[in-house]
Image 1: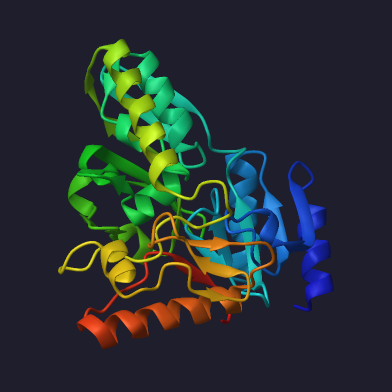
Image 2: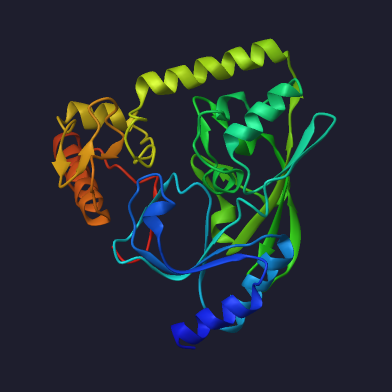
Length: 304
């Protein structure tokens, strides 16, 4: 179906949702980089999300789900797909004993704070991770020795044919910055996490210390996408990048942070092409000097 007809179809069927066309993805990524999405939708409810999935399936159009856009580089050419933000429709938090049920669109910061208010431990190290629960599950996000996969009981998903199912722990696989949810071609709706009793004062102290530590270590005053590279077996990527002399290296307005070498910052008007070239340059310099192969942690959308 031509784009104009597809756009009309979405606008007609999704009366209760926000539907925008040729929407700039730079508005929705922490890098502040990215071309236009053909169709951008913020569903108002799960029912509306199911409508989106069915429309896209019937018209054979790809769907991309975006959370905080904090681990993402979108092509300057944009994305030829329906981009869906579930931060409105799926952000509910519900506690039952030591367990918490939370929607995929909820931010990790909000979830961490609400758990601490309940005197529940297990999420305090996630307070500074700038993403949503859904993105954290896909990436098995973590900090220090903490990974969200360690506390998952189950995950509720919606497949791209509109079928909902619950995956329990034995159906899920979590490894370093990876989960098999990425391979399932699905939309994460909700997860249930198992927490432990804790003391509120201690939990908030840990969270405050974590936030202060991140402010001190990371270039959070510039647009960025978090850590660019995964940790290689040889050690920390920032160490290798710094030892290779790459701090401050630039392509256009994309720059290797002088504060933390595993961060690339947008120094004003960086493009996705600038970032991609800088990533290639870093990998080449580090490999040429130390025979260490760096692999990206960030995700790519669109043709680079």
